[in-house]
Amino acid sequence: MNLQNMARDCVRALTPYQSARRIGGHGDVWLNANEFPRATSYQLTQQTLNRYPECQPPMLLAAYAAYAGVRVDQLLVSRGADESIELLIRAFCEPGKDAVLYCPPTYGMYGVSAETFGVTRRIVSSTSNWQLDLPAIEAALNETTPRIKVVYVCHPNNPTGNLLAHDDLRRLLQVTAGKALVVIDEAYIDFCADMSMAPWLGVFSHLVILRTLSKAFALAGLRCGFTIAHPEVVALLLKVIAPYPIPVPVADIALQALSGDGLQRVKRNIAEVIDNRQWLQQALSPCLCVDRVSPSESNWLLVRFTDAERVFQTLSAQGIVARDQRRQPGLDGCFRITVGTREECERVRQVLGKI
Ligand code: PMP
Image 1 (cartoon, rainbow, N blue to C red):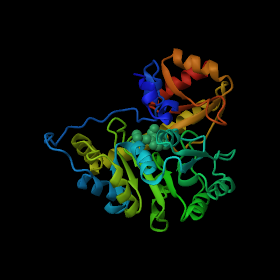
Image 2: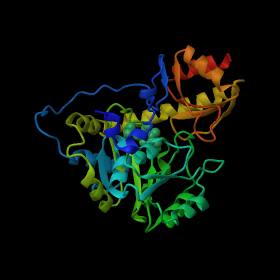
Image 3: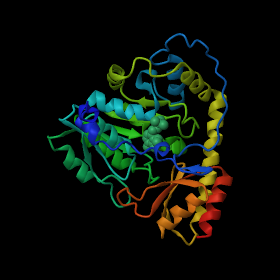
Image 4: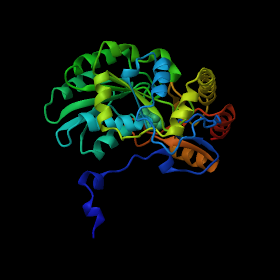
């Protein structure tokens, strides 16, 4: 029996997302997945694991709604923001007929999730300064086959680190009205919280915002993310989500992270990351092997090197694992280096300073 032939065509053709864990690497300084560098220890308070959990744990929704300044009926909790990227496609895109649009260089899962479900990927590269190419996006929205149903934008954008201009986002929301959802992926917005588009949810019913506890909350291993949207969008996503997506221990720990103490810790995490980012930016800029350190609003730096292959070999030999971005459009010679502890930042500077 040929199991390969039994699989769906789009799955056979699919190159799966190359996550940091799948790519792997060797070393003791892990700066390839935009994680927070230190773990907080938690104790489980809920022991009733014989029972299924609530599909959407009400206390967790209430806690995140208070944190984000939104209503509980505008909120969905899922297995990381990644699950929500997929749920949106499953709820809104007809395979073979509809398309999603996104703007590389950007996060890879928008394309991979679309491909998995046989939904067309409409790619409109960002401009040379990594902003939205609005005329090209508008032209794509006017095409009828395939019809664009979801536009994903990342704010701040992974891997370039920049925010998108608010005026451009407003224009994007205006030109998509009545046609497509606009999903603003705010996975890293806690590092620049004033720039969130959440206040615009009341104005645009087709605006969807993605959030996660994986970054500033230092809980990438927990797998907990949130979607903020119009209650009707939330209700549609709830039709396609798994029956029990949030395990009891996940809700338990997420609630602790969203408590008063937890939020104080997140504040300190963010301040530490920003301080270390500024230090690393200044430390790397004068290095001879560095062509450019892009300004970042997030917890990493995108660095263009003059001899990227040599840098890659040297970092690997020294046990520093960074994320290679050289295959992304327009990112020749670039690596994404997560901001780690100050000691980890010093290791990076020490190694790169010698090249
Ligand atoms: N969006 C972006 C831009 C990301 O970088 C990531 C993490 N790699 C995600 C979403 C997914 O986050 P989560 O861990 O919540 O699934």
